[in-house]
Structures are given as structure tokens and as C-alpha cells.
Length: 406
Image (cartoon, rainbow, N blue to C red; front, side, top):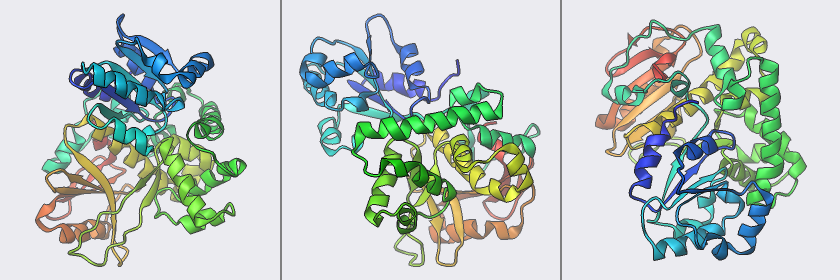
């Protein structure tokens, strides 16, 4: 069993908060984690059991009444339970009473979010990070803000890096050595999400068009979101396309990354960017295999960027730093793939490059960001397919991709 970054945070939250909700994609390992954290006094309930689900939906207050401490798995299947939990928590405000998991972000429902304000801590859990697989304690984000990235003599490079991005982070996919069998599992997983989980949270018209819509999104992963173009691909309105993207975000299939901008700089693009949250799933949807990527290295760039973006999100869940993620692009097309803003306003930039060499021109976006940020710019790195850290000017370096987990 892999150690998970968020276990420490979840235990801390249970020590002082009545309700702790762990949200993330289905099959990311949430159930394994909460059952490991359970004890004899904590009742385990899963709403994937149809009989249990029916009981919860028919009488939410009665279902919760009498539960002293409980783990409730897949809470999005009966979100009305959260209102009953609020009532019992208000009557008995002891910390650690309810440990919940959700494979859809129920906090996007306004009534739910408002009712549990101040009573619940939410922690996001994504599929396995590379550092979790290798059993390492990551320090990448802290070192990045300090400007102290190091060369990696055991860096994963070349063909091994391609394999890593194709692998993704779902535990069951990782456990399969055969690429075809791994992609079979990921295809089945995607079908389950699109035909079952989305029905739990919304009425989706044109459900049969969703697989095609997801393929369109996969072709645009790492690009600016053009909702009109995406919607036209399945003959729906701009508004419906935008709603579909929002629903796929709710089930943690994709993420939209908001742009960073400042009123001091007028020439900044303010369009969000799309990313798949698992690079293995992205590769499967796009039909990318190791042989295809190796034969056409041009397909690797967007896949690698989504892999790095997902790894950074996972590291954020492990870090005590309070960070928000953005992207940056100005009207001159200078861009930075990932921008992280610390709660004190300091900013770092990460550019992802799929090649083994880096040129001064690859830092154009980071230099533009540094100029826009002024004194708030802490550091910038181009992560590339090599093992050496190479300085490229004040607070700018090229650094191995393996810095993310070593």
C-alpha cells in the first residue's frame, strides 16, 4: 500500500474539525485511505451499496441519527445527507465525527457549501504522485520558491520519461505492466464516469455525445479553453459546452486553470486553460501509446505538460505552503505553463519542455512574467528532459523534470 500525502492533513483536520471531506476522482485511493484511518468506533458506510443508498435517500435525518462517528463513502450519491450531518454536528460539535469521501465536488451545490461553512474541512486527493509511488517526501515546491533546485544524477529521462507520462497515477492502472491492459482499464474507467457518475450530479442531455466531447477536450488539453469551438464539435450551444466542462470538472476528469493577471499590465490574456487531471487517461483518450509518441515526439509536449500540472497539484496537497495555481499569457503570445502564487503574494513560474536541450528563447514567457510581477517574482524554472540544473539569468534556471519527485 502506498503512503498518501494527504493522510497527515486528514488526521490533523479530524483532530479539530467535526466533518472532514476527502474529494477526488473515483478509484484514486480514497476508500483505501479512509478505511486505513478508521477504527472500531467509527462505522463504515458506503453509498455505492444500493440498499444503503435507498435508505439514505428516503430518510436522511433518520439515517444520520444515532451515528456517533462514521466514515461515509461516496457522499455525492446522497448529498442531502450533508444537511442532516449539519444538524447533528450543530447539536454535538465534537471534532472528528464524520469522515466523508466524494468522487464529485458536492461543494459546487450552493445550499451544501453554505450549510457546512465553518463545520467542514475539504481536502482534495488526486491519483498517485510519482513521489508517493517511490515513497519519497517531496520538497520541490519549497525549493522552487527558495530558488534551490538541484541536478538529478538519477533523473528519469528519454524513453523512461515518456513511459512515466503515459502511466498516469491511478493505482489500478499502475499495477498493470502491460500497456494495452492498462489502457483497457482506463477506457472502462472513463465509460463508468460518463455513464454513471455524471448522472449522480446532473441531468445531462446528449449523454451519448459526451465521449466525443471528452475526445475534443483531450485534443485541447494544455490549451486555452475555446467553449464555442468545443461546443460546435458536438453541435450544442456555447453555454451547454461550458456546462459540460463544468460537470467534467466536478467529477475530477479535467481542470480549468484560471489566468493570472494584474491591472498594472493591460496586455494579459484572461482566458482559462484546460488540463486533464491524469496523463494516463489523457493518453488513452487520445490513443497515444509508447510507440506512437516515440515515432511522433510532437505529441509528447501537451501530454507532458498535463502530467507536470497534475504532479504539481499533488505536491500542493502535501505542502504546508498555501498556493494557488494559474497560467500566464500576454498579448505577444509569451506564456508560462504553470504559475504558483503564495499567500504572501510571491510568485514562481514553471515552463514545461519535452526536449533534452533548452535555449534562451525558452525563457521568454518567464521573463515577461518576472517583468509583470516585479518584486513579487521569486523564481522561474524550465523543466526539461535532462539531469542538470543550468542557470539562465537572474532567478531563472533550466531544471530536470525529476526535481518534481526527487
